Length: 317
Figure 1 (tube, rainbow, N blue to C red):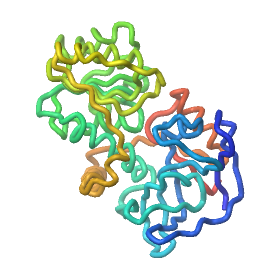
Figure 2 (figure 1 turned 90 degrees about the horizontal axis):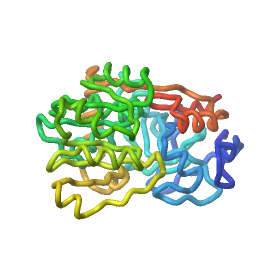
Figure 3 (figure 1 turned 120 degrees about the vertical axis):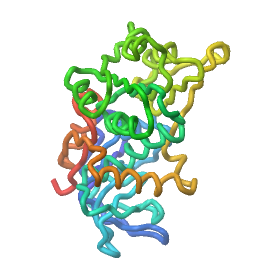
Figure 4 (figure 1 turned 180 degrees about the horizontal axis):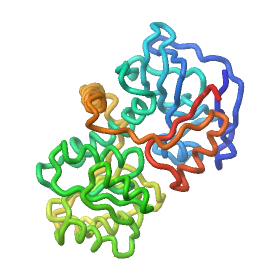
C-alpha cells in the first residue's frame, strides 16, 4: 500500500512516500480502507518529535481517517493514533464511529478531532455560562472555526475572534463572531477589551501560547478562564499564582485524548456535532485536499498559516 513514512525526525522533507504492507488487525482492532486522512497541527509536532506524546521510528503519521471498514463495509471515521497517512490504517474498535450518510468526508473528519475539541472547550474546559463573552484565537483554523460556531448555541454572549489576515477575519465574522481582530500581541489586551465593548472578557480559547497567552490573560475578567488547547508559537509561559489570586482568574489546559478513557466524552458529543452538522447548524471549513505524495506541502502550508479550516490527504493520489 502507499503510505507516508518517517525514518528520521525533522522538517517536511522527512515525509516520504513508501510502499508498505497492509497492516494486520489484532484483536480489538479494525482495518480501514482510507478515503481521506486528516492533517492536524499536532502532526507537524509529531514529525519533529516535539508533541505531547513522543513517537518512535519508523513511523507512519496521521491520527485520524475516514473510510470503509474492511470487515463490515461500513463508512466510518476513526482515531488511529498513528498510521493514518496511508491507503489502509488500523484503529482500536472503540475509537471507530459510523458516519451519517449526509455528511461528506471533510465534514466528518473536521468534526472528529477539531469538532470534539471545540465542543469540550465550551462544555468541559471553559465551562461557559450563559451570557459570557468568549474569545476564540486562531478562529479560521480547524478548531477555531467550529468553536466560533458553537459559541452562541452553547449560550455565549459576545463572541470575539482573532485571525491573522483580513480574509480569515471575514470568515470568522461569517461563521458567527461579533467582532474579529488581528492577534498582534502588541496592544492585544486593549483590543480584546475594545472588541468586548470596553469590558474584560470571560472565557478565552488559546491555541498559540507565548505573547498571545500573556496579553490575553491580562484581558480576563474576575473569574475568567483561559483554556490552553495548543502552543503553536512553541513559546513556553510561566503563570504567577499570585496574579491568579489577585484577579480570580483561572488557567485551564485541555488535551482531547484524555477524553478517550472517560465514558460519555466522545460518542455523545460526537452525536451532538453530527446532528448539528446534518441540520446545517455548523459548517466544517475544509481548507484543501492534498495528494498523499504532497503531505510535506500540507505541513508547510499549515505551519505558514496559508490555509483555513481542515486539511485532508487523498491516499489514492
